[in-house]
Length: 76
Image (cartoon, rainbow, N blue to C red; front, side, top):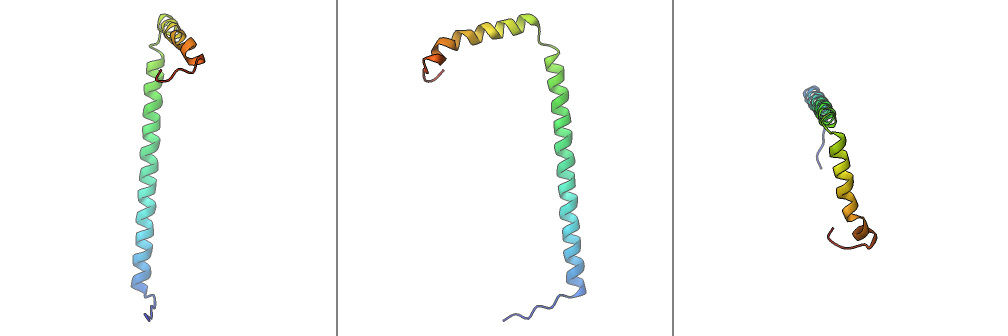
């Protein structure tokens, strides 16, 4: 049987460990927010480059799959 009695040193080490974990979590959250902001900027830039002709071509391309999709054809 181990008799564990927390010491002041153990408590300081535990608090330091918790603070480090919290700092790491905050850094990860900030990095994730930066990634989201970057992705939003890239999507906005990409969307602004899509022309009406691009959109019409995509719709026509999708139509070519419609009958096969309704027929539930595999490996579309």
